[in-house]
Image (cartoon, rainbow, N blue to C red):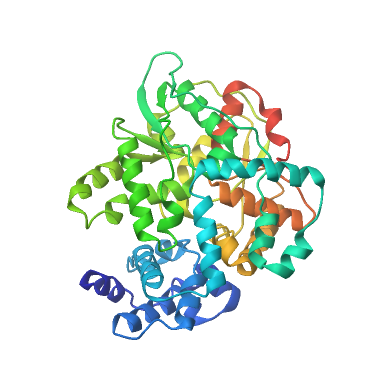
Length: 420
């Protein structure tokens, strides 16, 4: 673990990370800041056993990477927290209820077919208008959070294995359909495929694809993350570019070189895969527009998903794509660097802290006074929409791909219907 110790030593404890850390902003506790957690990591590295208190502070971290953006010393906190969480899972037995809860989450969310099986009981529950929140809150905060965050009802969309380019072909790309995105936001994937095709791309959508491993990687389940990474690399072996429309997935896939660095038979393949992975906005900005944009007379509040802005450094490209639509106006959200509280499964495992952050983000979105909230991650969309409903407010929510699709096809009016 010499490399890990070197990464720890990069931190000079300057404190530039403090005002960008969501949990430090919430509680003002040093051990709930990046430099405080690095201090705990150093203690463990020097032989201190993982205590319940240490694990609690590590669990409270959202992994939002705002500190990575803010750090003047280039501390790779993303690597530090991923390694530390893997150590926690290996070394520190969790309480039975916590362990069962985590196993239940990871037995369902990374598997699209299992998520799909939830759609019908979810549809029936939402249609019944029964409010189970008070009862679930007494049983388990996590179950209550699941009920509040239950995604909108959506009909299954079956995409073909190939969506051919419209007009002269400019490129061939593979498209990740994801897990939550595929089953609960299928319209985002359909819009992504249409936009890529209208911009001159043959879009290859492998039928055998599964989870990319993002949730597992960000939760310390390293063996599981490696297995998903290998499967994804194999699935997209025959395409030169892989386009991703979910920020958390793209961030994880761009980390495959690090995830599989210690496996010689996979290391080079993982490095090559990382190099060919592109976020949708990143790729479209590189490709340049060809399809005609029709006017959309709407105001948009653009939300910077943490794993897009902080982990991948992609901020300008989505805004440039939106600004390329005639009539559309972007209104910035205050404190964009502070996470909304979604953070993978954080809003399920740490529901109280997540709700506080969601409420803060909702206030800022509301203050922007926009017609439409645009976000590039399904978890963020659910989290912010849920927090807005707690305020008694509704806002239409869309992905960047859906806004582009609506402009190119001239169907902007469909964007302004709230999804629930």
